[in-house]
Length: 134
Image 1 (cartoon, one colour):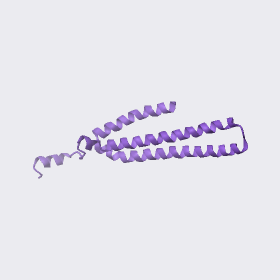
Image 2 (image 1 turned 90 degrees about the vertical axis):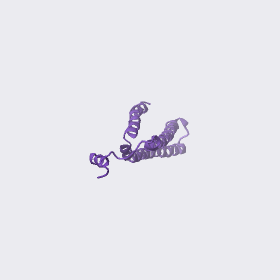
Image 3 (image 1 turned 30 degrees about the vertical axis):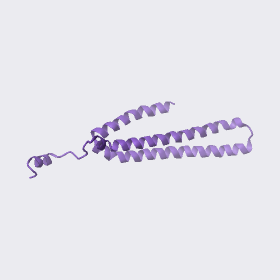
Image 4 (image 1 turned 180 degrees about the vertical axis):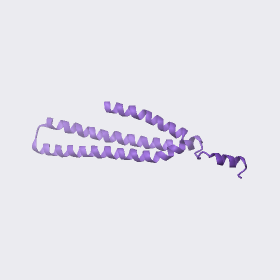
């Protein structure tokens, strides 16, 4: 529970910062959006692999214990661990989907709001435009 509070405390300003960057600096956000998507995907892969490994280990442990023991109390920890791993994978997948939808929304935010994403003009380009292209 404490870990979730810490993660949410870190994520709230990060999400706000991403929205600010996407709105005020759309060119800069488009440069980092793809990398953020890859990082989020890698984090999900690590979470999935770790919890999948935990689930397999607990299944093997339960299989061995069921064959040798008839006491159900020995299995409670492994069963609870399986449920926790399953819930972690489900939550991580939902967060991944929401994150990718949010990144996609922010990527297209300038188009939605009609904000230009052209690069800012240099001083020489502004002078040429004022002089009629000369």
